[in-house]
Every structure is written in C-alpha cells, then in structure tokens.
Image 1 (tube, one colour):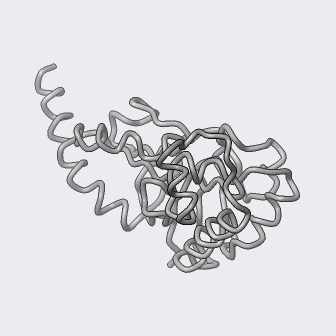
Image 2 (cartoon, one colour):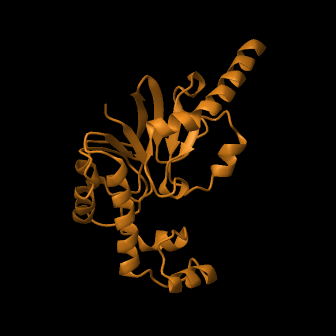
Image 3 (cartoon, one colour):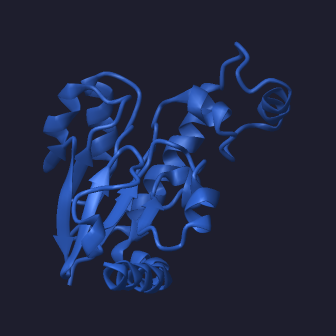
Length: 208
C-alpha cells in the first residue's frame, strides 16, 4: 500500500535561505559570517548550495517510494522553469503534488501531478487542509480536519505546542529535521492533539 508524504520550503538553489535560517549546510567560515550577520551581503557558496540541495533531495528519495504520493507545500526552488524542471526530475516519486508558495513561479505547475493554491484532501478517511501559509481556522476545522502548512520555517512550533487542541503541523523542512513527514508519523503526532481537540469540542457542545 502506498504512503502519503508532506514537505515544504525546500528552497532548492536558494543560497540566502540557507544563511537566513542557518540551515546546517554552511561551511565553517559561512557559519561564522552567519553568526555575525545573517542578513549581510555575503553570498553562500555554490558548493554549500549543492550540499543543501543534494541532502534535501536524497532525503526525499530515501524515504518516499516511487509509488507513494508526495505533497510539496510551496517554495520548491529558486529559479526558472528549466531549473525547477531539473530539480523535479531528481525526485523519484512519480506522483508529486504541489501547493503554490510565495517564491514559486506559475510555470512550475506543469511539473507536478496536481497544483493548487490551497485545499482539502482525504487520506484513509482523514481530511487534511493544505496551505503554504499557517492558518488558525480552516475548512472542516471544527469537525477534526488537520491543517498542514509551511512558510514560517519553524517559527510557530512553540505556539503550536502551547495550544495542543490545534490540529496543525508545520511540515516545512526547518521544522522536520529536513525530512519529509509521512501520514503515519502525522497520525502519531496528532493523536494526543485530537484527544485535546475532541475534549474541547465536547465542552463547547455541552456549553451550547
């Protein structure tokens, strides 16, 4: 049986995001520069960008089988259609679907099996709302639908943890150890949150 996987914010070919987010692919010299001034005018080396890109693509190929389904929730890469096409060709999974992000070109759509701005999917009976951006209310949220997002590079993890009834998860690589996340893994993550959600939902219903 096939599995479904989720990731976001790969930013393949995007040197600046590596230094802005201090992704663990910088050289020792670049780490020192990032500590001193992350937003400075210095450029990440081409070698570092290659190391970053290879790791993210290899991580996908090691976990996601050809017959599985992969959703990329935006910010796939930096570059032209031709550049994006080369990156897509390196991902072995046949069915790769796409949620558009703010760094993506419209031409990228044709590289994927499906491309949307946002929407709900269903897997093994579970409804999942997909958006590049984090939301605090979404379609079918009151009925237990999950929400997966990217864009914020892990900055909402503490906020999400502090509100355990929210059925949300940042699946961007900065929040997932640079690995795609499977539905099976999400089920384990969501299980205690669903308990908190339904307890809260029942209290609302009783209050009515």
